[in-house]
Length: 265
Length: 235
Image (cartoon, rainbow over all chains, first blue to last red; front, side):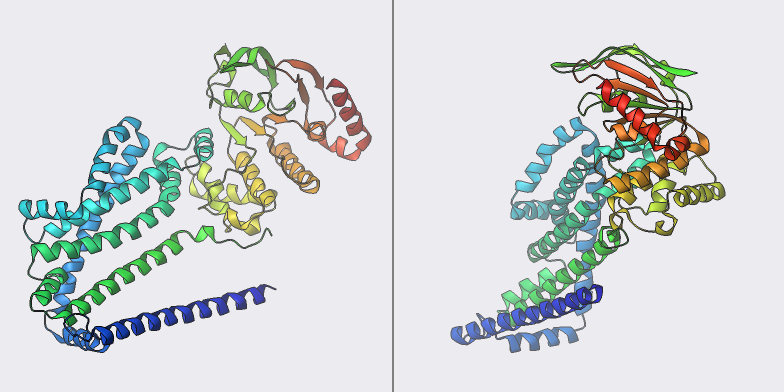
């Protein structure tokens, strides 16, 4: 019975993989068909020519430097959002007054158009820091809101139990609050990084730091090199996807207690 | 010796739960509070343990006492293993070596030593409740509060758990306040029973002292039957 279940699971994941491949093939075919219909390499390049551009980019001297710098901006923006989001989220989750005072700030940040944020940042900061600031303003509210939500969702019965057994506050935070918000936090991290990453590239397009995926996109556009625009976009997508997978992996590890099968049944 | 609850008042909006309740909790005995659901038994335990504040009344005997509590639900930390869950409440009290042997010892008594590295989600409800019982006894409390810990378990499991519970209790005979609506449970383990009236504010309808030990009751089912009959008549 157990083995059967395992086998079924394996065949399901195999099937799932097949569907993923299928969907990929479908996407490529649609792209190819459109490029044939449009019949203009300047408007829609074919998948092959994009692939060739991608390989050419890989061979350029600055390719990895560009990616590393963009990634660095994304990660710095994200790290600041994460730390501040966690701190402010905890403060707001514990303190109702702080929460009430802080809530409008979050709403305003969330509702401000991305372009406004980038334009203002362009005035305030050096080219290199514009993407960091913009991605911070996008990611921070997501992390903060999720932490507050996570704290609201903590089982008061567990806190009561900890109170009876006279567990110190520091330990209650570390061993009850933090693990309880992990599911909220991992969801927040993957959304926040996804959005932050896109904003980093958008901000780079406008702020034009020396080494940046966004700058490369903009330059390719200026020279009507649509192949490179597509190629850089694919790279940006791949990086976003890889990070998403990494988060899922960490989530799976940190939530191993959730897996349901075992002795009692 | 007894811990005294004197002239206790507590009301919720629109309803008065206790209005001058008096009760003695005998030390090193199992005092059972028997009554229908929703009559304020949990509230009483919460007042004793200090989770809820009473409006007035004297419960000073319970101040500064250490409590452990077996709740209706296991209330385990689902991200910690069975071992870690018990370790969680003992870590600030015992040094490493004693800590380890204490946790293992109590897990042994409730028959879960084998499962010490399991996460609660991988155990059945009855096993989880056994962890919570082990946790309550492993914690060096002076008073153990129990709030219908065997509710929602089937009859066989209930017997097993009662057995585990009594094995643990016999070892150190701590003061127990046991709240239940189940006459059978009360008849097996109580030294003293308060039967509550089924109306607000909650009053004591009757009391019963039982002198037979748990073992005597196990050996002589007839006596349990008599206790049950008396308790039923009280209702």
